[in-house]
Amino acid sequence: MNGDFRTNFVREGGGLKHYPALVLNADYRPLSYYPLSLWPWQDAVKAAWLDRVDIVAEYEEVVHSPSTEIRIPSVVVLRDYVKPQKKVAFTRFNLFLRDQFHCQYCGAKGDLTFDHVIPRASGGVTSWENVVAACSPCNLRKGSRSLRRSGLQLRKPPRQPSAGQLQNNGRKFPPNHLHDSWMDFLYWDAELEA
Image (cartoon, rainbow, N blue to C red; front, top):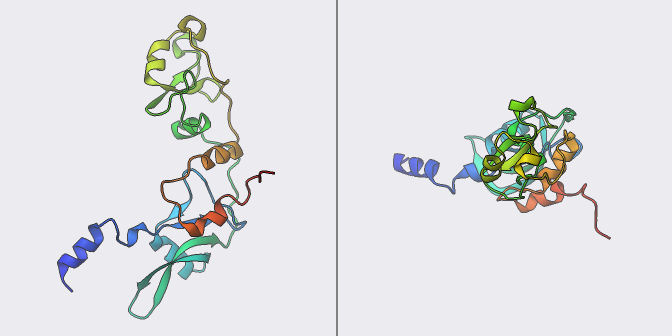
């Protein structure tokens, strides 16, 4: 086989690396919505081969070994139920997800940082109840002053979110690519409009 062909295939964006599999828990719900629970096609094929998942939907594309041909899975379901975490980790990402990637002072989206509502210089702690997402201009405007002294107001008081609240917020931010075979599994538990 020509070595240039292999190199081009691996480097090109249209190669097999763009066939992720949606991973569902044993109850047919995604393990997470944001980021969406996806596996590279290689992991999905391996898990199916080891009987750890059931394949629910497949791409048209196939992969070959010397003795086997298999269609690439697009949706897989875990055979064993993974219990969702109840406690939410206090991370920058989860904080931004709680605040839906909006500044909690002006509502701007985009380049966010985080701000201590009660500044650390005044005894404020780094916790769910005292840290909010903030854009750089609002964060600079507030500085190490109190809300009253800075003239800023919070859009909503900061609270520790539940895992379910973060999952619901994550549904509002779908990835850039959603394969048609995933749609029936992503929003089936959402409340229907009357």
